[in-house]
Length: 276
Image 1: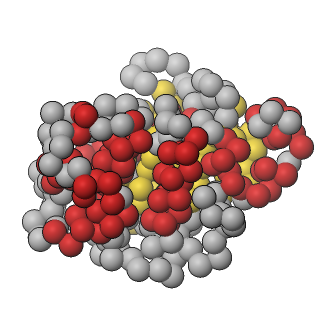
Image 2: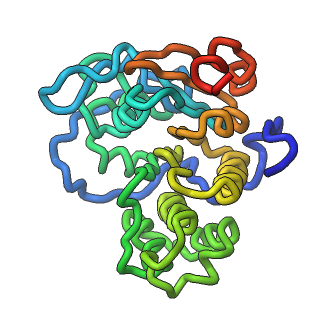
């Protein structure tokens, strides 16, 4: 990785891989979406004071807030069972937010289905089952552009520029790739939608330290185009090292919030979550 993971120039690089004007339209598979309302102000994406859980089960999140602005990398860390992935899924609409709200680019999207949130500009990469193993690399990327009606060939070339190994293996079934290469396919497919925000759930899970460093370098590169990145990460120390903003969750609640540098320097955070 680069010597200095903190970049003062987040947001002023080539933004052609992002979509500041929104996306196309599609008929949602989930028809229970509600209305949205423009509220304005605040961070570009925020899950604000979220309390909720899955179905009729108990609350997992308790007044939890996470947010990210344009050009930022925000990371969610914490011990196992802290609700990190649950918080990400709540922002994406995969569980019931019983109180609180989710706002994207000034619009309250709390009542939208995940499918409609994708149309609004959310690119989400789950931790597992995030590629089509029987399809080729290029077919996976084409699937990422399913909501688009324009020519997406330029975006595909940008993804190939970001992940050169994918261009080399574009005709190979994605299931034959290494774990790190599969993650690149998953991220690349999300970028094919030209999202307004990119959400990554444990992107380095199960990969080697070298591959983790490479993935973090690419994540930094994407953020420097101005695209906000919200990421759940188990490798807390390494994730905070590249983070503009960090959230430490404990039992579904905000325990510590600050810049990545502040959290790395906090003695309580270091002692409790970073191994001293």
